[in-house]
Length: 556
Image (cartoon, rainbow, N blue to C red; front, side, top):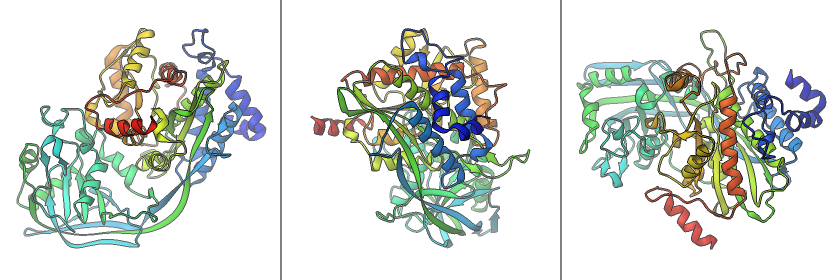
């Protein structure tokens, strides 16, 4: 119904939706003109529209992208925000779409005979090479532990090893997942992230890299791997700056890995050995023959950038970010639903940015610093839109104060707590704690630090560029029903809806009050940054501090 109305009245209708809709508001005290602009009803309306079947799961390069871009541009225009890229609200993001033209194949040969794995059931593979056929023929296989080279932790799974052209099989996560005395304990480092595994294998010159899936260590079931990687994949178009790419990369299930180890005369004890310091990679008496048949299409997706120019320091920038994309149309679920609507992930975050933008426009005066609203593309494909922005910033990163990112809001009610990933990184954590204290709430330890959420959302690309960044996550200490209930709802989302067609807006089961309170907290942090001249800093020990220190010197 909302979408039909938008078609009929265009920008005028959006003005009514985003500027006049204040019924059912959040935790406004009435003393802040910005907070008075928050509305639970308009938040729900935006989520409902963006996650409707009409938007087809908001996959880049589809009609769903066109509808999403039009919706957001009209929304920011209706709110009175300026275009953030010259005269345009969009930033082109050149991508290549690589899709399978035939089923992938993996066949292993061992002294005990041949072992063929079933595509999508036993493994998921893809390639970032834009070639018609990427194949391996009788490729040597090496088990390389976690596939990590981390001198600061005195850990090198590739020590003394030459894997050029070979296939490496590695485990997900890092040693701290199994031994809290190693690395950062149960808090995953970037070395545990699957993207790192492929990057390091490519640096080592490997031909292919396969990660052994484990639900606990990965923090999601194999179904998520299938839905995220089993079909068309997008990558940044690097034709102007080519680099070495693996021929094949992907995941294999743990049962499939056990079959391979058995065929090689090994068992699960090899995985146990790899969890201890001093492990040496093992060449397995296996060869791999495999292929990915692919076709490529080059196209451009789009980031959306809107801004409010600062009144005193217009060349200093506070960024609010959220990814607008999801997975589109894919493998049907048991009910036959093939549209991955992404209501929580991340129609909710995209809608949250509109709430924050309206709050800023409701202030009697413009903030001192320029405030940017960045809705990025292709997060689900590997944080590509934010990566492109970080590599091709519209505004200098040296004078970008911070990035406050929103990725999936709380949809099950108010909580006493709020969480964030990446403890010990920046001063923004202290700002969040102070904000929570004002409202009688508290910052709780990250619920699943082993999941590596700090490396799984768009703020990470700002962090890699030295910009202090934070994604605040919904808490679990439910005001009415306690922590056990909150954790149950969190885990239900991960197992039953995350990256599945069932991630749909449901007015009967959703309670957006808690999410709205969290959004207001993020707004308050951003408002403080935008109306000051202070600069949040990285904490001692952060791997991103040296980058910021260098740009700080340049800024001065």
